[in-house]
Image (cartoon, rainbow, N blue to C red; front, side):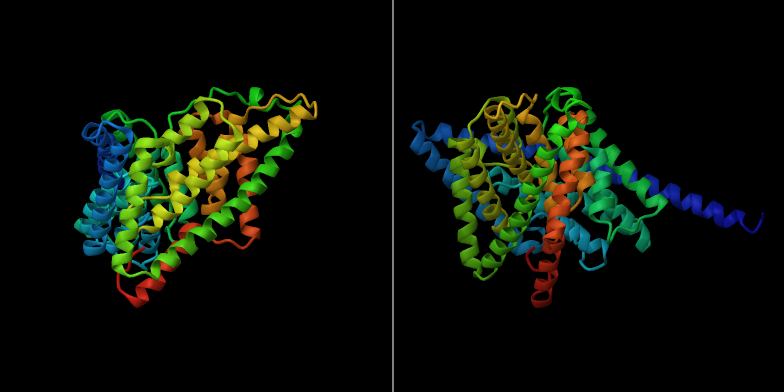
Length: 456
């Protein structure tokens, strides 16, 4: 007993230390992410307010909004280019690379550049999500604390992952999805142990508490459709009547997800061939377009939370949904390729909602024309497709299922989420498509061989 006592006590003390540090990471990540969210919202509002106040007529106001957007996007690009090239883009691939020991984390400069650059880019109206910056900044906080406390490699890996999970939890108000994202999407590089798993869970929970209870900031998509499983898909009487529709939707979204990843990577490759001045001009042009859209047609600009809520708020036509799908998808590719800080996580969810709503409305019209009396809710397909597109592009179906359920408080749709997300993920896998963040990390590592700390 005397021989096993001291090592056991040492292990317990080490675990408790990691838990305490993970709690600190969660609280700090939640605080920083909440402040970032708040200031971004104010920046977007200020952008449109200034444009409207300086020019009363709509064309003049749109021109001012475009100029402001161009300046903000260009400033964001220059900030990234000059001080922290690795802060461009989402940052999730940077966390994955750091977990695998493949990428450094220059935590101080990345946190500053990611915060200010993300504020400028998203505030300009670009179609980017705030979850990329919050995840990256959360990981930087984890790395900062591990360095200050002089932890070993395993402890540093745990706190880095805990910060990333806390960042996602803060962005979406979804702590369980934060835990699953780390363990499922980053499974190849996250050092999964009893202690590390609980540390990530603790950090994600406390980040959500800080976000919701201390700062009072709600989730990204405060939607509650109040649809019960019995209402949306009567079980068991009509479950198998709806099952083919969800399988078909999963196939469609899976194919769309493969195309999404391919076009995104192709767009990034095309921009990589351009020189610095061309890239700066491109970023400014995208900021101008996004700034004008932010004033004239806000559903076509921004991260997508307002778009998703508007899609659910009122009936819409297939034609309008198609325009939304094309414009939002194109703006996502171009905004992300501009090299400024911002994620594609939230824009993907918004695109999925439009795709699913279009599918639901079309299916309802077709089945009604065939005199099939099925109690369908197109809204439910929009929610399910949000998770399915995430599963197809990121290849993390469990995270997609739980994320949508937590985001929208539609837990009764979990059975249909499971079916559609799994089908979409398997479809993308069978088509040979790699997960988007894995592909982005490969690009980063390839660029790193040519130029240290190249833009992501």
